[in-house]
Amino acid sequence: MDQVKIGRFIAERRKNAGLTQMQLAEKLGITDRAVSKWETGRAMPDSAIMLELCAILSISVNDLLQGEVVSTENYNKELEKSLLEIMKEKEKSDRHLLVLEWVIGIFSIIILFVPIMIGSLLPMQDWQRLAFVFSGFIPAFVGFFFTLRIEQVAGYYECKHCGHKYVPTYKAMHKSMHMGRTRYMKCPYCGKKSWQKKVISKE
Image 1 (cartoon, rainbow, N blue to C red):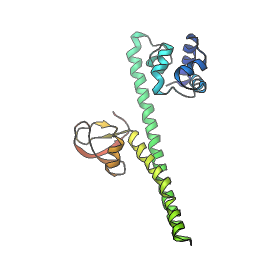
Image 2 (cartoon, one colour; image 1 turned 180 degrees about the vertical axis):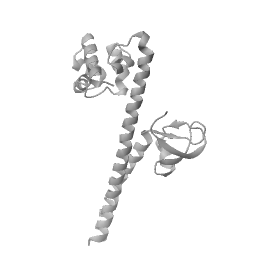
Image 3 (cartoon, one colour; image 1 turned 180 degrees about the horizontal axis):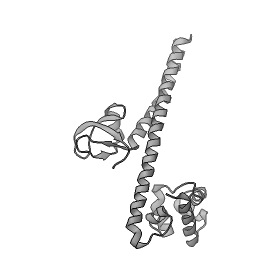
Image 4 (tube, rainbow, N blue to C red; image 1 turned 45 degrees about the vertical axis):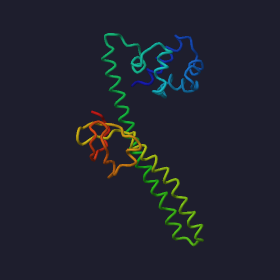
């Protein structure tokens, strides 16, 4: 997607609607700085407000993603193109998230074990040693929570039986046995349990 083109299109449609950046921001419940970032191509509107934005600017979501009003005869073709671009962007984002998962996981392990090692080596009273060791558990626990959350939302899990690809619930992830990013879970489509691998694309 051409964010600069989309930004210019948003600015043009906003002006055609007789709105300032501040007025558009107020209608959407955001800051004028966010609108400015869209119009300069530094950011894209969040999906949560995209429909409302399009309604205000009297355009379709497809028009917005193309950065121009799409003609009727080219609508389906351009819509398919937009959807493919969105899928590619999601796959790219998911890959980055999964790398981030490893980074957070490694740091969480370091944060967990360093206080334990230092506490066992340095001379101190038992209560101080216990407090020092415990201090590593809280940040490590938070880190592990985020790694599990990232693994849940980034990409999909593929059922070994029916091939269905889906995003599991956090509860299903938390309770499942796993080896790396392969988890033993129940498929919501066929209802069978299997060792399911993490995949990036739904294709």
